Amino acid sequence: MEITLIRHGKSAWQEKKRWINSAQFSQWIAAYDAAGICQDHLPPSETLKKARKASVFITSALPRAVQSAEHLSPLCAVEKNELFREAELPVPFSSIRFLRLPVSLWLALARICWFCGYSPGVESYSQAVVRAERASQLLVEYAKLHETVVVVGHSWFHKLVGRQLIKKGWKCCTSKSTSYWHACTYIAE
Image (cartoon, rainbow, N blue to C red; front, side, top):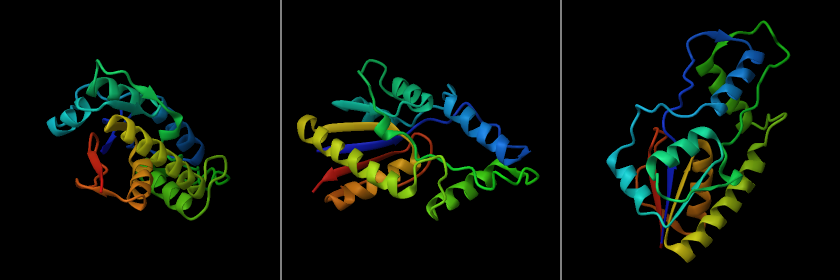
C-alpha cells in the first residue's frame, strides 16, 4: 500500500514585493486562495509518475490544488475533499493598522502565531491536528481498498497528515520538502 502527498504547483498569485498592513494581508490571503497555478511551472517527471499510477486521486478544493491535480492526471477522476484544505493562517496584529511588513514576513509571523495558539477566526493548530488525524485515517482506508492513493494539497497540512501516518506505522520513503510539486510517499510497514 502506498500514499503519496503532492504539494500543488506554484501559485499564479505571486505579489510579494510591497509592504502591507494587516487588513491588506487578509486580502492577500484571500487572493492567494482564489488563484490557480502558473501554467509554465511544470512538475518533475517523478511526481508525474506517482500521480499517474494512483488508483484514487484526492485534492483539496482550493483552485491551486484542483488545477495541479488536473495537470498531473487530466484523465483521472479527482475527488475534491475539504478535509485536505490547507491549515489556515490567522491575521496577527489586526488592530495595529499602521504596522506594515513585507508579505513574506507576514506569512512567517502568522504561522508562528498560529503554532503558539493564536487563531481568531481560523482553525486552531490543535483543530488542524485532529483534522489531519481524520484525513490520515481516510487515506489508510482508501489505501487498503485501492492500494495506491495520491493527494494533491498543501505543504503545512501535508506535514500534519504525514506525522499522523507515521504514528499509524507508515514509513516515509522519500525526502520531505515544501517545494512546489514535491511528492512525499508513505508505505505501509
